[in-house]
Length: 415
Ligand SMILES: Cc1cc2nc3c(=O)[nH]c(=O)nc-3n(C[C@H](O)[C@H](O)[C@H](O)COP(=O)(O)OP(=O)(O)OC[C@H]3O[C@@H](n4cnc5c(N)ncnc54)[C@H](O)[C@@H]3O)c2cc1C
Image 1 (cartoon, helix red, strand yellow):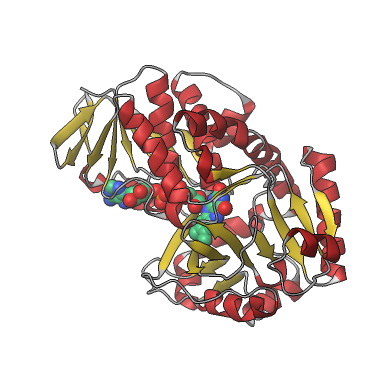
Image 2: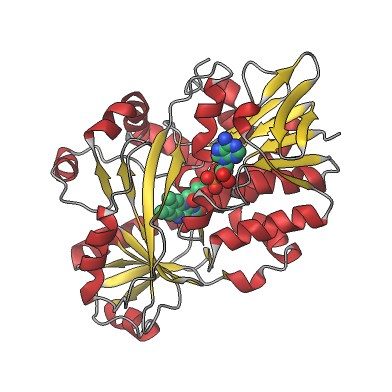
């Protein structure tokens, strides 16, 4: 019999399974798909030690007006999406107030700072070094005023969080990236972040390591989860029912739906993102964000991946990759993308908590039930770090950081 059932084999669930296994626990990892085929597949693959602050919502009227009129491409919305997420968005907006955002970032920065160190052991043990580059990514600015702002932010991140970067002018960036067709004003090079050329493959490699070490990977539907009288949890899988005294919910954007069946109301902001791959005749050495147009260009095994910003649309909305097509038009002067690789249109939802911190710790009302979800824009980054913290919480450790992540202390969990 297993000691733990982990529901969800994205980056968060797979790392949770590995970490518990490393502490000597018997673990069954359950997903309805292969590991790493959802949000952890299609992201930009950056292990973001530089992301010390979660993205706030803009609060100045001019910027909000630009978004309302659809003038910007990094964040878009539709009315059903705003209505579906209204309470969560309102809390997210309030969490974006400078003082609150500063308090949240105090904890967030402690998570992202450890991310590459925490990934390093698993990358090596999984033999996945060939998927990883350790030389960062660029945020490229097209005009001088925007670059100046980017440079000020980079200096502040160094002062406040110790996050280093280099500033490149347009000529320096062009010399490093010959695929660029024109010079922009410059770029911030966040050189300590790592990048991955196939995020789904890294998640799958971690899952393979878990299996090679004796872990059970099972196909099953999390919504069959039921508490067993005084004995833990049961979930149905293709190999029959699996039972364990403890269960971790690591279902990313699907966690609120499952937990609603157990009586929890968990508001979440679902920030949809799209990607497309291009067979570029000349590619980039590392990811580059075109800040003005809110898209990231990432050299991946499948081609040059363009990943989009956030679309605040209803979870059931059909794919409408307008940010992607606008991004394609916008970067045409910067790089030759080449033909689009034919594949079904991918999209995923960043699972963002309204107070911007992931939920990592005990479920407020159920013994033996643990949460590990809500990692928003940085779940690929935070898998190993979040798993280590959850295991500390399970072991009964206390710290200021664990308290900040603890679901039973968070007003965003309404039971
Ligand atoms: C366009 C885009 C770019 C991004 N770029 C980055 C980046 O560069 N760096 C970064 O750190 N993060 C990035 N992110 C965010 C990151 O991808 C997510 O935070 C992360 O993948 C979430 O991982 P997860 O394991 O919580 O969720 P998921 O990877 O979605 O895993 C959840 C799992 O639950 C399973 N599941 C769902 N329902 C059920 C059910 N009923 N039964 C069984 N299984 C179920 C799914 O099949 C899935 O495998 C990006 C996101 C997007 C959309």
